[in-house]
Length: 134
Image (cartoon, rainbow, N blue to C red; front, side, top):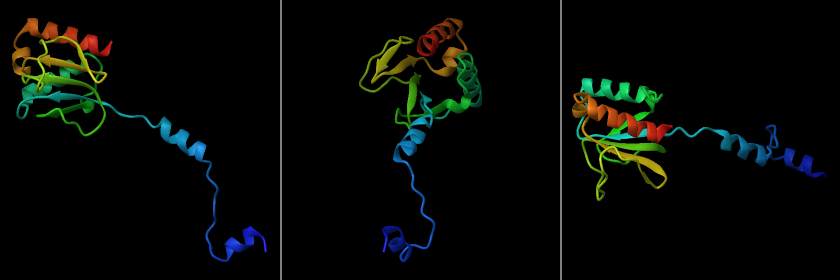
């Protein structure tokens, strides 16, 4: 009795051979979506949310690519971290200065309401965003 006939006594379904190398290359090609994490104290007002979306749209970051949280923990891969109105724990970063932590850009900024009302702070944030994404 051949091996093929022997298996048919136990398995009635069709069996397909899958090339493991092909399977690995398919999973390796799946894109990893990295969001920009925006750490803010409390919840954002509607005006702050609109301003945040407008600021990131200027550097071609879709609002769906933003994750807003009160703490820097994230639910997935992060492209960059922005602290608005809250300082990173155990770190002292100058406002609007480009820093890297574990290979990810980190920017510390004033609160969104402060930035929205001050053209000088808007320019500083714009320069920091350009440093991150260009």
